[in-house]
Length: 254
Figure 1 (tube, rainbow, N blue to C red):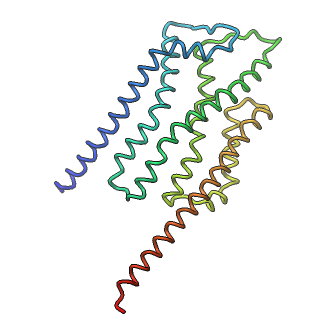
Figure 2 (figure 1 turned 60 degrees about the vertical axis):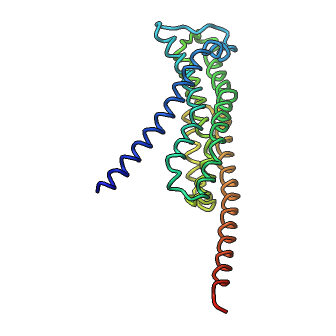
Figure 3 (figure 1 turned 180 degrees about the vertical axis):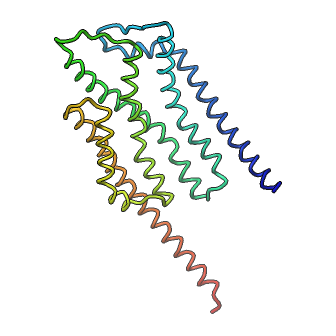
């Protein structure tokens, strides 16, 4: 029991170390982002024809921290993935270590790509649609908190949704998923993606269509990538089996 307790304590200590490193990176990037947040803020509102209003001094700080927080999350994702890999590394085989490590850099690039898609495509489309509804009927007046909450709600989810192909490839390489399962679950997955698209876009068919299509394309790309990874995995397993059979035959007495 003492040996088991010591083993458990060592694991907790290792987990604590990985969490501290991840938090330290997050806080560091958050601090640096906050130092440069004003030019970032100016760039984000460059297309607005009006200045944003604030309802209190704390709202300015809240907006700056929200912008800095998203940047910190983006840069912390690969670090958190690497620290997770370091924690579970002893329990993985050499092949699993190489496979999991190779996916970490793509986490950052896909997250940033998803944010870019949400910000440059979905966000202006939805904003222009809503402003078009108010034209001639309402006087538009934006507060900084409402404006940036609206922006983050339309961009941040795409950062995570664009990780779907990578997650599918990763789970396929570990044998948890395969393209056959994904193909059979296509209808259910399509329904879920349509629901997500409807929830994050205004209630018009054009906006829903423009968001649904990329999500469905992402799913189909995930199936194709899963098929490629699965074939390579089967080929490696077949090769390993053949080599093992050769070794067994060589050891047999003639």
